[in-house]
Every structure is written in C-alpha cells, then in structure tokens.
Image 1 (tube, helix red, strand yellow):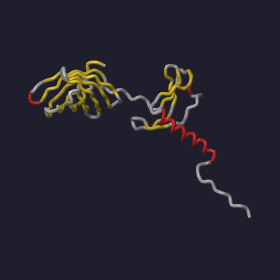
Image 2 (spheres, rainbow, N blue to C red):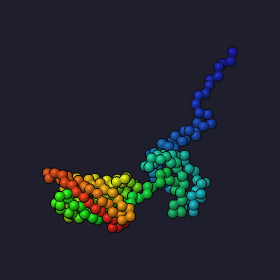
Image 3 (cartoon, one colour):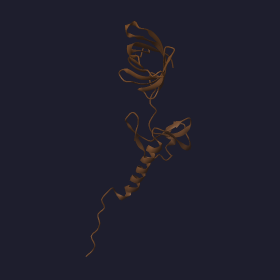
Image 4 (cartoon, rainbow, N blue to C red):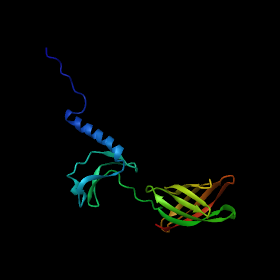
Length: 196
C-alpha cells in the first residue's frame, strides 16, 4: 500500500520567498526608514519616473499622521531618493511673535516675545520671554485652540490658551501663571506674528 501523502498547509510555496523578503524588508524599514530619506545609490534623475529601474523594497509603515504609506521614489536635487513618510507641513505658528499679557485685577502688564519652531502641522516648541527677567521654554499644540505650557528658569509654570486669527496672525486668550511661593495668577494675553 502506498504511503499517504502529506498535505501542505500555508501560503503557496512559490510565495514563501516573497513573504520572507517582505517580512525582512518591513523589519529593516522600522529600524532605519522611519520617515527617513534614503539615497538610491548614484541614480541620476529629472523626474521620479527616471528612478523606476532601480530596485524598490516593499516596505510600508504608519507615519506620524496615522496613515500607512509605502516606499516610493522621489527625484530630489537630481538624485533618486526613496521616501517613506512625507515631511509634515510647517505649523502656521512657526516664527517670531510679540505682544503683552495683563494680569487680572489690573495688577500689571508685561511685554511678551516668543520664537516658535514647528514639530508638525499641529505641534510646536519655542522660547518665550515675559518681561525682562522671565525666560521660558515652551511646548504647544494647535487644534481648535492654541494651547501651550511653559517651564520658566525661575521655576514658574505658565499655561496659555487662546485662539489664532489667521487673517491678522494674532493669538488672543488667557493665561495662568504659577510662581514658586507666590501662588497663582491669571489674566489675558495677545501675541502677534512679526516675523517668519
């Protein structure tokens, strides 16, 4: 009696090599291509279609915006470059801002000056000066409102919440300022963009 044949369970045999290569490529992608730009040898190009003859690994990943994208060719400065995640558009808040804050109850007004840098379309960081003595590092996010938290060199903590008028490039809102051993103060502020 002939021996029973063993059945094969799994992907078709001709696909095994492809599956393995894809797995290795994905692993490599997460290690070295997380949103990065990778040079494609010495490929010279005028448009991205000039790069099609070069080998493109099958790598896909989730980008910072939450969407999945796969490797593709771009022609950058005359050279073929493999791209994964596109760089985010700059935040509208990037640039130099100046204005003032007024403490509730008419207890004083301070000049404000800030230099903000984009992390993404919504997130930003920067440095802000309140008056002549208080220098703070800043982290913020813009959704429907502009919100920022500041850690100051004198130990103060400031929270800003406001709205951006894109026409006048002005942020108006309220702040809370907690000073060491002096308690909490609040008030209003205005910042206007004065430079890129």
